[in-house]
Image 1: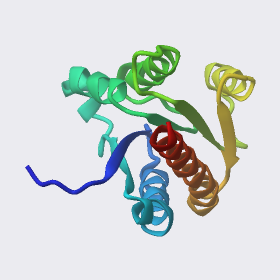
Image 2: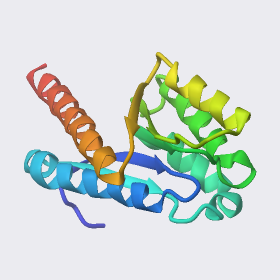
Image 3: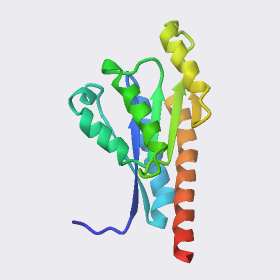
Image 4: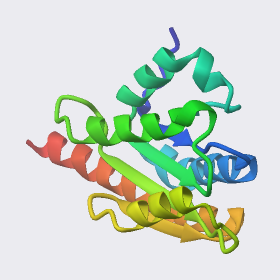
Length: 172
């Protein structure tokens, strides 16, 4: 085992459908925050998640365990919950984990991509339900770059919070 001295916090990225560019922008935002903000304080945000939608079917138990072990959950959504709506189930599991004080989940963030041509009533209803949630941050974005900019600010805030908790624990 390599001893590295970093305080690591998992960030589960959930981005079903054709949101590959958005998923990569999330990873890039986390990497930028790590480089410029977290690593100098020996903190590391570790992005976890699936590379392809079909993996959620074959590795459902592993996905659920990864969510349970994560400190943060980022849900990117436009119009599709992936195979068998399993990404929705992952999102709901993340909210349950956040509400369970025995688990490390601290925050769930929803990132809604604009979908001006969406007409499916079921998708529109769920987008509305997500937008009206008051128990989590809901971001709106139209390009992967605008998503990345917003996530860098949020991730930097997470690092500041972790840093504050470490400082408070040290002075106790």
